[in-house]
Amino acid sequence: MGFRRGFKTEANSRAQEVRRELGLGALDRLDPWVLAEHLLIPVWPLSVLQETTPSVTHLLEVEPEVFSGVTVFRGHKRVIVHNDSHTPPRQNSDVAHEEAHALLFHPPTPAIDDRGCRHWDQDLEDEASWLGAVLLVTEDAALEIARERRWRTVEEAAEHFSVSVEMINYRLNMTGARTRVARARRSWGRR
Image (cartoon, rainbow, N blue to C red):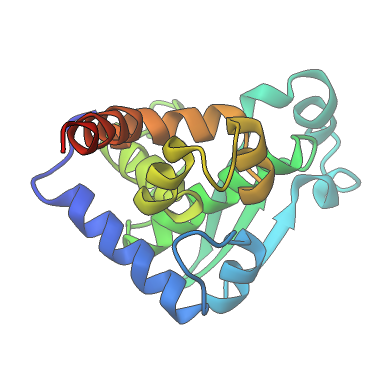
């Protein structure tokens, strides 16, 4: 992931600002549905389309891993549609990812390009993935998890933040939290 210069700092600031607006601290759980309400973005489970669009059953029951979520635009209004067959922690990540697109003011794009292929901008997707993760597990939270005081295991932290263990490990790795905490402990031990 090669981000534009300053993006990670911008993402951390944006997440802190959003958390302040919601009255949350860095160690509090962020509920993506509350954030969606705050942003005035409706969130629809994919299953609501099942009756009118039978092919949705395939995405819910046969190959749920091929669809996580999408933002649908109509003019300036947007709706997030997410795959509600996923686990609740995965749904939280999926919805936070789509909210990140909105918070980063990513422009709407057609789902399919002129050749009939799925339109995909990897840079925008990477930015949304990064900010979505930061919204759910802040850098301060990753450091606190690495200290193993409040939460003894990544499983406990995942339960607290209502995210997957994979998300906790991702944030621990991306922030270098374990290394930073270990380095701090070594320097404290020398004093």
